[in-house]
Image (cartoon, rainbow, N blue to C red):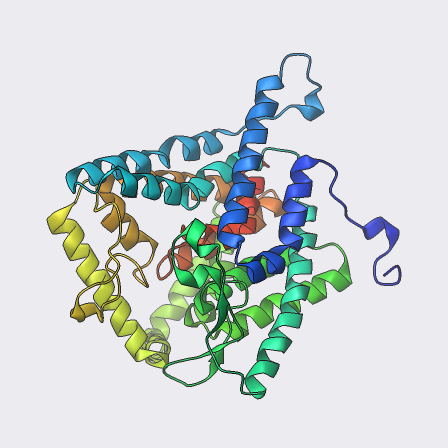
Length: 426
């Protein structure tokens, strides 16, 4: 180990908040095998939030400046707007007479999903070093490499696909059984190829995590850990066989460059040159883009068709039944038109889900802090590498929100939420 890492490169947690983050990351696969992730990591986040409140309560004029906690305005915006979803939930449950029991379950569900988006910008104001997060994610990526090898060996040994077992924590935490299941691999319905999900509930979620991890591990200062982390993150992306991952990486890189060069002449020069080139080769470029999009959709044609049906029907139900407050919850199954998949979820994406379950009020409660965060990160990213990483992670989450419910996945993508918070604190 000493040959692998010099003493100066060894990173250890220095305080309570760093210990929770550090050991939380290192225990990722232990929690996955126990089926405890959906419970353990939201609890960890709320413990950090309560610890922050305690620190703020004890803070006074005599507190040394280096120990003072300063909360940026953008963090307050998240804390003010996201809880407005709770109001939407309460009124939707009243409108549809869903009862107190379901309301309590919905509030608990909000607390471990969108609630984490509200508190991580605040939690990041604690004394947590970005380099601790980078190293921790590198270690999880190394662990993932071992598990990827095991999963493919299981495939070669013809171990049956699907869940090996389900955790009893499902009875406590609720939600989808996929959150608590352990499996080696499963076959893609279209191509017949094996897909991996590892510690994520679904394969597309693994691609999302691989993208987040990729941008985090690239900031690791130790070259060997950086290489290992990069290989692990890329392996997660390829193992998932996700279509979204094919377009996310170049889009995020280009979008980051554009957003961080608004005040520089090179952006306008590049835009002018790009417009000229586009005008000359417009026809062939449009043909190539259409061909690429068709190829992506045809990779899993039935999946694309189902997503479209779910989104279309969910938006129709939102407009006609509950435009202001939403329905409050998603039913266990939908009609035959959607192959009995639940309306408002299971592939509809974050935005359709928010409109269906929390209505226009919930949508506004989400869009305001998201837009403000994009503006703040774009400004900071031109001056800070930490903010640039946070912007990339934020853009990844935005892109995947088109097809994934990123709020439901907060218990696994929390390192990305923490990174965004650290970037906003810069």
